[in-house]
Length: 478
RNA sequence: GGUGCGGUGGCGAAGAGGCUAACGCCGUGGUCUGCAAAACCACUAUUCGCCGGUUCGAAUCCGGCCCGCACCUCCA
Image (tube, rainbow, N blue to C red; front, side):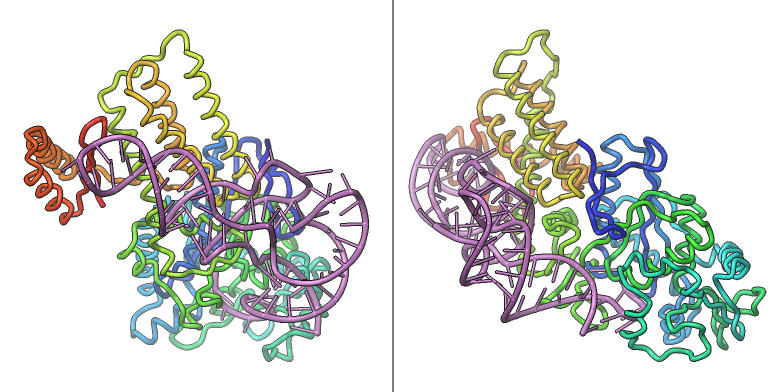
């Protein structure tokens, strides 16, 4: 089975073949840090977190780069509003960005380049484009000439004529073509500025991604991702700049995620229908939010409804319960693979293999996380069944350990399992709860149900659920 | 106007020519159990926006229609 990816450039599913065997290079457009992230902003980073985990699972060595556009009109505006420097705004919201992504269990990428650290690289590329006749200088500004790149429009599927007709903004009449975009622009008073051959100024919006992607990943890297609104003009312009400069292809696969809507409309600060990650995370566990978002294929729009979160929490809890139960069932159990497996054990192994295969088939099909989640629940049902079918010892313990490993491996790709944190305090708490549970067992043995129920009720009020099972008392957090 | 995407049970959401239309939540009945919880089992869409067509066979392909959304401007 091979991985197939939907490529925006060809508008088709293509088999994934990496540029370098065994290695995958990824560039995802990061945030402009001038405000807190809402969950719509977070979707691409969550999606790519899973893609990265899956590629790693498949054995690829992954190099993942995500930029911060830390100089930009929006940042400058915010800085002026607050009377602080643009750098201060950017630093603050980059910190907040990490805070939010950590809460969602999104792993750090390999490189987080910032535009302000790459001004000289940007100037060099702009210079090269001028030299090759793809850009021109106009009063301290440098513009990219779209007509100099015959393939302009190939990513977004638009022609220059379409674009001219649909243009909704006033254009600078001095530009050679209305769609020509700025590579370098002069800074106004009190704006961040860097010296350049064309006078003091700062980079335009699109050039930084070309520069940083090429610097850290090289020409023809594997994946370039981002929200589907970036297809035009941002990514279109990146293609134009990069390929004009390189003379060779920029990116192998363009991957764009759909939007998160709210109330049937795109979630956006300008619409005012946003749910910030930090607000959501106060109410719901990060993995439950992941589960909710990953239940929809990444290219489909997702209409976010807060009312649906409780259902997501319950679904995710099923997985957490199983994870806990597996840990407890296997704790202290000796795992010694027998020389010969019984037919029943073989059958169980086949079942596990079947689930693994189904999971991979789902993920290989353009990262179909919704289907993969379904497979995880299929596996969960079989493991729950196995858990309930008899004592966990000998060969059954070995089989169950295999099942647990698979469950954690697949769940880990989605970031839905292996998320409970361990700490010294927690270990102590575990022991204390265990002690209380044992005392209650004594009460039950005496048929003192009044005491037993009181203990259970009081613990329940504290958020600790006791469950009496055939295998003894078991507890978990609500 | 141009370019894309989508309408599947009470809700969310996979499936894209032929297995019982996944999976999760909710609901009902049952097993287990002192009770509860968890888990498991069974039931819950003769039907996939509407109307035609192609086909032995369509939720899946084609045509028309009705809705909804996005992009063409900063935007994940």
